[in-house]
Every structure is written in structure tokens, then in C-alpha cells.
Length: 207
Picture 1 (tube, rainbow, N blue to C red):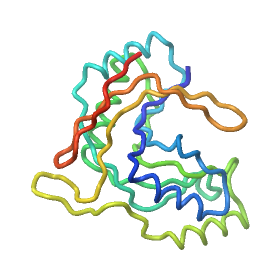
Picture 2 (picture 1 turned 90 degrees about the vertical axis):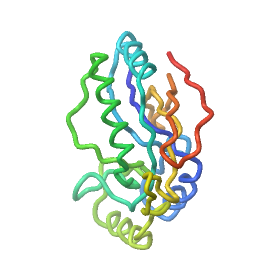
Picture 3 (picture 1 turned 90 degrees about the horizontal axis):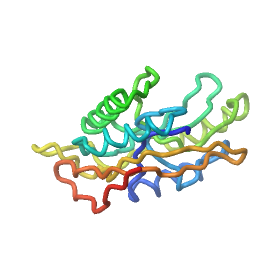
Picture 4 (picture 1 turned 30 degrees about the horizontal axis):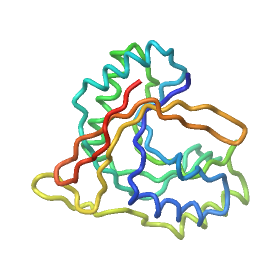
């Protein structure tokens, strides 16, 4: 089963990201219901390993974190393959990523070694943009320069004014189809509120 661990987007972040999708005239937009922040891509995982991972995450003290958009970035080098909203490297988000990676290793799941760049994929460009496609993308992105959500300032307790708290971590199965990926939530793990954030009422649901 092809799976990943991710944070669904809080409602407050969705509208500005949908506006970005509408402003870029190239690529295929990721459906609203599929927008997320990937913390770990697991690849093909056996059901037994998923059960072990569920036990690890269900019994773990997961840190809360803030999500805050801080501009746009493309992936794929000279022939961009996707456009994403970059997220500020909130300490809680980095801590949660580290805790998730340890849980995967404890469950016997090997993760690819790559630098964690928190982001939300917004548009995909297939095999990559070239020529006029790149020019159209660059013109659209120039008009969206400075895109942010929330403020960067904080309080003595570490709360970030205007940043949005993530509410839940999800274990998701992904099925690839010609029309795009289909996602199914296999388990959900509520996150505690970061300092200064309201709590989540979502209950844990395991495998």
C-alpha cells in the first residue's frame, strides 16, 4: 500500500492557496481536498508495518505546530514540475517531522534521506515546463510576490500571531489513477495546541 504521513490544511490557509491556483494559467491544480503538508512519504508499505506505525504514533507525545505560508517555490530545476507554497520552518513543525521519522524507523519503515522542505503542492506540470510555459509561470508568480499568511512576530511564550495551528496528523493511502491521486485516510492523530493556540476537538482514529 502506497502511503504518506501529512497534515491537512486548516481552513484559514485554504482560500489564499486556491487563489494562487486560480492566478497561475499553466499546470494542473491539486484538488482542494488533496492539499496537505507531507511530513513523510512512506512508499509501498506492508499492512503489518502500518499497524506497527499506528501503535508508535498512537502512543507518542506528538508536538503541536503552527503552519504559515511564506511565499512560492517551484521544484524541478530548469523544467519545473510543480509549484508549491513554502511554509516557514516553525520549531514545532520541525519537531513533529523528527518525531514522525523516529516512529517510522521504530516501525521498520525506511524513509528516503532528503532535507525536509515544508510545503504545500499547488500545481503540477507533468514532465516539466519549458519555453512559453515557464514564461507564463514566471509572470504569474511575479504578481504573487510576497505571499504570506499570518505574521512572523511572536510572544514570550512562542505563539505566533496570525499563524494557524495544525490540528491533526493523518496516515494516508494514495492510489494513483490517470486522473490523479486518490487519497484515503487510514488513521488520524490529533495534535496538541501549540502555545497560544486553541485546541482541536478531533478524536484519534487508528487502523
